[in-house]
Image (cartoon, rainbow, N blue to C red):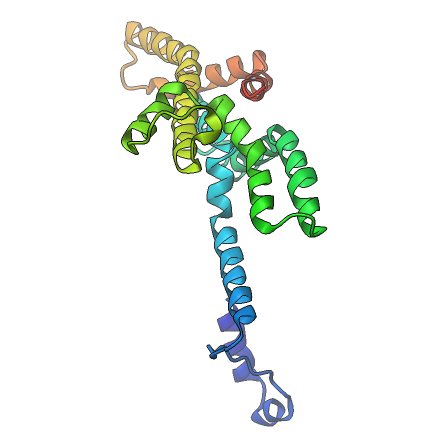
Amino acid sequence: MVACLFAVVLVILPKDALQAQSVPRISIGVDQSSKPEDIAVSLQILLIMTVLALAPAILILMTSFTRIIVVLYFTRQALGTNQMPPNQLLIGLALFLTFFIMKPALEQIHEEAFLPYISEEITQKQAFDQAMIPIRDFMVKQTKEQDLGIFMKISQMQKPANIDEVPNSVLIPSFVISELRTAFQIGFVLYIPFLVIDMVIAGVLMSMGMMMLPPVMISLPFKILLFVLVDGWNLLVGSVVNGFF
């Protein structure tokens, strides 16, 4: 889009007008440096850019986002409403619920890691270690022991004396697997009442000889009605959020 607008401007404006205007020139280059400080700053910038690129994965894999979004998608599939609610709405709801659930951990990170670091009271490594403490505590509470054990077995590491000795490379995938298992269990429970409605509607249509009428068209309004009558969103969100506390 930007390139198209720039091309249109070049075509419309006369050459004299373009020559009269001063256009900034941008150049990117790699120069040699003999100062170690310049190299350290460059590495820090590269590290920050890498963290920013991995920020979505960190948000998805180390918070409650995984379980919430999977459960919301299961709910939509069980209702059979195709693209309603839309993906943007479900992702937005999952993000705000994630911020709500992770608020205590975020506040602890702000008080014990971010503020001391910007005040130059602790180093960057110490700030990272302090920031990981509440995140690890959250993941440990939601991680199943068998999931943690299988990754420890794969990595061929000895049994640690306590959970603090478990590295992040083992804890994070264990947490993700545990969250997926819990989300699929919730999704199975969600499917049961809507599956019963589909079976009842299909049996009624077959008994009436209406084989050409898709049962989904008839069962969809009843499933939506059931979900509204039981205040489904309230029950669903309340149950998912309470599962983390």
